Length: 151
Image (cartoon, rainbow, N blue to C red):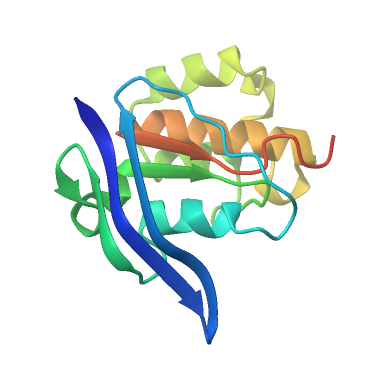
């Protein structure tokens, strides 16, 4: 059974056509990779699936329109967004389960930095924090963009 269905997806920036009538089906549990040159539309494609851009066509996840479940889709990017002063504060925006937070911070070797400012984290620790935030949200779908950037 297909978990992600993309039907007749079309998208343009101004007058520049980026995608035209794209169709794709992904089964639950599948891992797929989209390989292409820089500036070819990979990030745009993921942003469409996340529901961040308007498009023509249909995108469903678990038979639901993405507009209804986009909060249950996690998009990991090489860019970081932190809204809180500390790592703990950032994670408390997602869950109040301190036991769960402590365990995952230990798993990612960030437990000793729990009170560290999110603004002072290295790029790699910020990426760890983004992954932790994604896991804590328990999303229906995880999209990862430019996983090897900055390597």
